[in-house]
Structure formats: structure tokens, C-alpha cells
Image 1: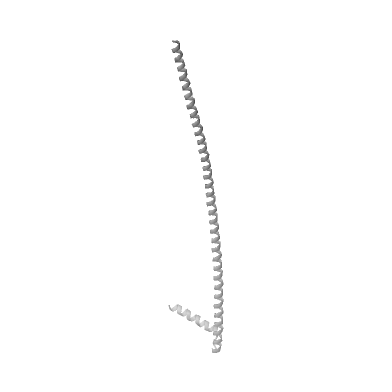
Image 2: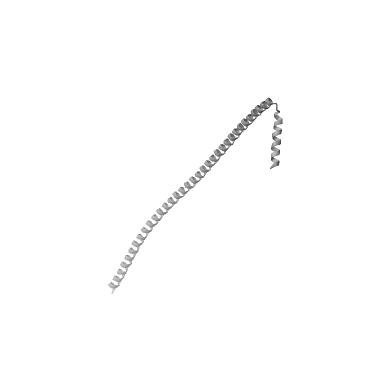
Length: 146
């Protein structure tokens, strides 16, 4: 009986030792997988952070580029408006100069025409001023008839 009891105890000890070895192997496998997983997770997290930094950097560059484009467009619009104002100023000055020339030439031609008329009337013996008065009276009379 002693042998059977001893055999049973020995078998129980072997079984317990086998269970402990099995648990130890499972624990080692679990630790190994957990380590690999945490390493993989850390690697993925590192990649994700790197990717996020790259994304943030790209978005910042895009934002800066948009800002530069807006600034450049604003400068170009201001320059275009300045050129437009200068062109309008030059056009206005040219117009006034041409109109001044036209008025001067008209005044000179009327003056020379008036001198010629005065000379012609002196030849006929009429006063140019009297002729002007008569013409003004005719215009007034025509205005009253209508």
C-alpha cells in the first residue's frame, strides 16, 4: 500500500510539475507575445506620431502657401489698381491738354475771323459792333415769334 500511495503521490507530483511546466511555457509564450505586441504597438504608435507630425507639417506648409498666395494676389491687385489710376490720370491730363489746344485754336480762329470781318466791314464802312448788336436783336426777335 505504501507503494501505491507513494506512486500516487509521485504521479500527483509529476502531474503538478507538468502543469507548472505547461503554465510556465504558456506564461513565456504570453510574455513573448505581449512583448512583441507592445513592441509592435509602440512601433505603430511611433509611426502614427511620425505620420501625424508629417501631416501637421504639410498642413502648415499648405497654410503658409495659401497665405503667401493671398498676399501676392493682394499685391498684384494693388499694383493693377495703381496702374489703372495712373492711366486714368494720364488720360485725363491728355484730354484736358487736347481740349485746351482745341479751345485755343477755336479762340484764335474766331479772333482772326473777327479781325477779317472787322477789316471787311471797315472796307464797307460799317461798324463791327453795330453788326453784332443787329444780329443779337434778330436772334431775340426770332425767339419771341416761336
